[in-house]
Image (tube, rainbow, N blue to C red; front, side):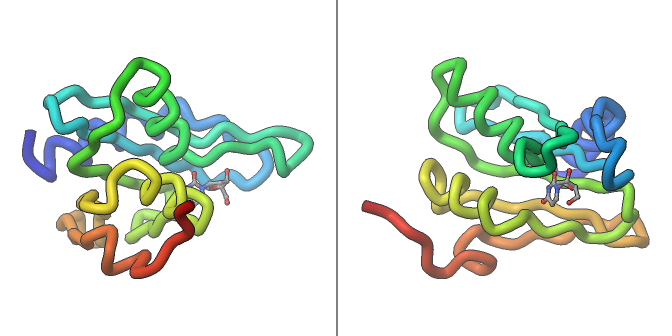
Length: 126
Ligand code: THU
């Protein structure tokens, strides 16, 4: 699974985004260390705080099916430009995979890759 393939899967997942309040659709594709891929989209709610981001949807789907080791996550949005994960999603990523590769997409369609440590040099852990 290469970065471009993972971005394509994230783009397909974005089609399922439920974002009637923000109209900002996000899709994620999480690559587990064993090669399995879990997808996610943002799921909004009339009580805004009950909304869930695409990244956490994918991570929680994976963890709920027994996966805890992740190597990469691709994230795309309807903005058409690089969309960085929010702070809560970064904290959740750090819980499981501080070595995660974060694959985004620039407006020209090319992938941009960050290490989790680049975007979250310090995070809370017990
Ligand atoms: N959102 C995500 O799904 N992932 C991000 O990384 C940033 C924000 C969602 C939350 C909300 O449904 C919408 O985008 C606007 O904030």
